[in-house]
Amino acid sequence: MSGTLAILKKGTIFSSLAPTDFERLGALMEKQDIQEGETLAMKKERATRFFILSSGTLLIAMDDGKSVVMDRPGDFIGMELLSSKGEYINTVIALENGEVLAIKRDDFLDLIQEDSLLAETIMHHWNSFLEENVPFVEQKEIPGMAYHY
Image (cartoon, rainbow, N blue to C red):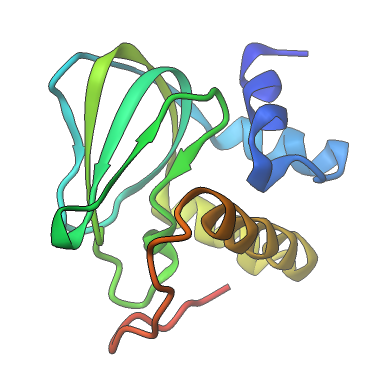
């Protein structure tokens, strides 16, 4: 199994996908080295990539001074790319050198739009991940942020 697929299997969001779904998703991933202090996503900028942490540590800076540190291979960032507004809602900064797997917004949307079961599985695990890892963040409807999957 390639390193990319091994990382995908570690992530909560993808843990129960079928082997063929791993292959399809893995084919869309691009490895990207990250450097300490690098900004991967800036709040209110167009969401162009969905990130999965391969190595290193990332800080997700949220509103009201809240933040989350992502340091486990398979942690993921950027689900707001599914919204109709398509803007990052948080800023993501590398706290140390490492690597992420990135998938382009349009590629990811195409994949889940052609497979509703895959989309449902990913969104179910995404919600579980949020409840477990950021319980202090209230999940609320944001005008213009309707999800398309």
